Image (cartoon, rainbow, N blue to C red):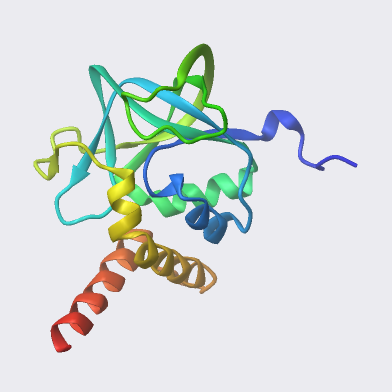
Length: 188
């Protein structure tokens, strides 16, 4: 038997930051959906001063390598919307699926072949187009090494918080988690 949700109600979501990590997706959605490597053209992935996650904004002749999470339910999309908070706006964009021999591409200069199969998907675009805190290029491999474990713990806290009658938004959970971590570090 198939899913009880009509296929038309399902969503495909392009992810490019912490949601590239299956462990983070599993915490939020309680599963890891099928996915496909993809490229979002004419966008750039920035680092954000004081944050461990990235932002994307439209910038001509740039591209963001990520992946498309396939068959996201309306309920799961709601969780992602809440997780992305009001710093991001969910937009519909065109991405190009890539052949990758099952390996996640490392960056824009990847050996993956662009199949040019275009797919319309949702993604989360940074709201503040002139944010002075955006800089450089965010690096997923560096994030995995330095921040992944803490980010998973913060995401678990976010999901616990979501169950409460008056839950905090993700940014508040993020700031509270990293403030407590800094306090613990300075006491050591």
